[in-house]
Image 1 (cartoon, helix red, strand yellow):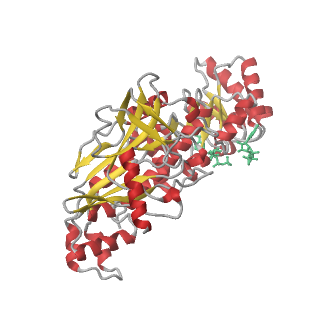
Image 2 (image 1 turned 90 degrees about the vertical axis):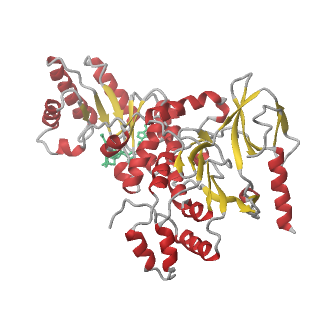
Image 3 (image 1 turned 90 degrees about the horizontal axis):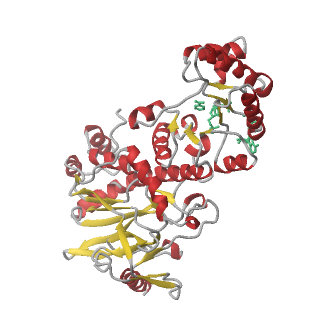
Length: 480
Ligand SMILES: Nc1ncnc2c1ncn2[C@@H]1O[C@H](COP(=O)(O)OP(=O)(O)OP(=O)(O)O)[C@@H](O)[C@H]1O
Ligand SMILES: O=P(O)(O)OC[C@H]1O[C@H](OP(=O)(O)OP(=O)(O)O)[C@H](O)[C@@H]1O
Ligand SMILES: O=C(O)c1cccnc1
């Protein structure tokens, strides 16, 4: 069995709907779907969009091979052979628009839009959400950690605790986009060019007759990359003094020890004491790495206690997004082909937050030309021209329409970029360093109140007047 073809990485109901479309003769009708999430994760003020690169390679490789067809033939639904023949011809021929990786994004705005034959647009829902939800979640978690340790080095250590191999790899990449500096995962390093870094484990120390012998053997082996784990027996009585002895021996060879690592106990106290011991022994350049179930809360707390930590190794709580292990992104039909055009469609819910916003839309980031800052994200119907012409726009809250303002001198940045057009890749995938730089620059657009980790001010995501009117009309129609 090959596990590289992701074409059947979809929910069965998508295949059943494709089958029904095929039987009903509606498979070639075009449809527009949008992916978005309704609530920001971790109570953060923003999320960091990630997942596009994997989505692109998934879409490009879509193809039902012999193994897939054989499996489908054996299903209890008894799909007709002609349908399976149709699947053999399948490839993605539609359009896909997406926000770029690293972009700061918000709730209830379209992040990715698929316009294609319904046959194709339906199949890709599951995988797109799977990839976007996880990677965006981890990039956002990493951005929160980055925020509390902006000037420190951040290492991603999560593979052993990740939800299997894919999560480890793509989580490492998402963390790097959001500002982590390196990963311990060698495959992620090889695949994406992320710097790979590592120290050593307790087993190295346990496997020698004494701690100092273990340290010496390690230093002899990798003299230019010596970071010693000092907490196997007793951090301050034996680990740090032994590390100091090795630092001295290295200096005699004209070498400098990189760091020590603390992995248990009171990290604030131990780092302060270790710093003092290293400084007093003449090794102010030896850095202190800390690990042990860290997250943004603990790191921020350790900093407020005056911890002397230069490098943070963060694993479990980052790679599993432990405090919120899933982002609830959804993929909703917003328009369908009818009479040669697109008819907007809506999904009604008793919960107003869950009522979808109909229509084939564009998303703009409105930058105030006077302040250079983002005023709002603005969602308009694709055929609305006023934004492109730079006409005055009204930013308003549809629930409380008296809360509104007009904005005149703005630049409207279109956020949804064409990625596939007629099935062809229309986007040059940026390198990872470029994505990381782009992500970092994003922060310049936003006032700090939207970015803080706790109780951030809600950034405005507004609908155009025409779009709000359309939504209202459709809600009314369906309430009759
Ligand atoms: N000064 C501190 N303030 C707040 N949290 C801390 C401080 N020092 C360590 N922590 C955190 O407290 C938790 C301690 O967990 P735990 O008790 O399992 O670790 P430990 O005492 O080091 O034991 P182990 O040897 O099993 O790792 C970790 O999440 C660690 O990051
Ligand atoms: O704590 P995390 O953020 O997940 O970071 C990764 C952890 O993995 C390693 O030890 P491991 O947890 O395997 O063993 P230990 O708990 O005995 O140190 C390392 O020493 C870190 O503590
Ligand atoms: O290099 C390390 O110190 C490391 C790597 C993975 C997990 N824990 C620690």
